[in-house]
Image (cartoon, rainbow, N blue to C red; front, side, top):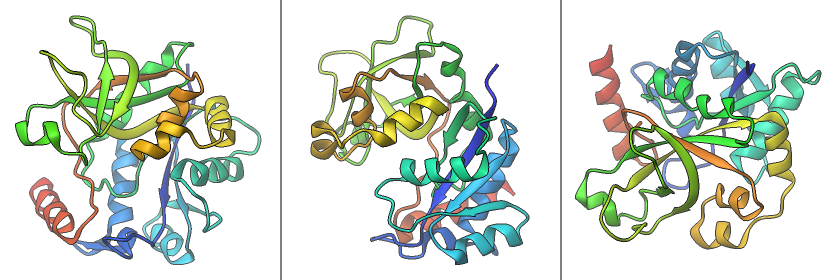
Length: 246
């Protein structure tokens, strides 16, 4: 049995929505809503990996556990790894869920689901996907597609590629990648030590670094697409969604 911890990387700098983790949603910062969702998933302890003291203060005020990390990490995975080493230097937790801090309405079930593929010892990294049914999103480069040869009646399969393009060609389902990741601890340590990949830079998709270096990534189907908050319009939509949920 795996013993996972959930780590939520957060930093204030965001090009399209500055101060994003502290954006107000019904009287609480967005990062607190994400933390509450992770706690509700009940898969393990939840830690927010903060680049700034202001974010850490907001989390601890709400009763959460926050760890201050270097502000200059190039990726969320690097921030998660630093926080993991500080939170658990003895190595008691053998898996870590990297949950983005801009998913305030994510279903706790989706967080739980992403751990399941790691039950297969051959899998290094697990992630989530949903069948893409909106025609407009088939050609939207902001909707990342994951190529999975999913066998009939299966909900989990090996990810062969991730792209902003409409792939694969031909008839059949397309899968929308949901950027929540579960790593074996050893796999995360390996991943953050790897050089940036050629395709990673070309597609601007961090997960391609793992595939380029021969790591196995499996994706599992979930039932809903969580709204990622990147713009003021997204923030207003998140407020509307959470108003309905409460």
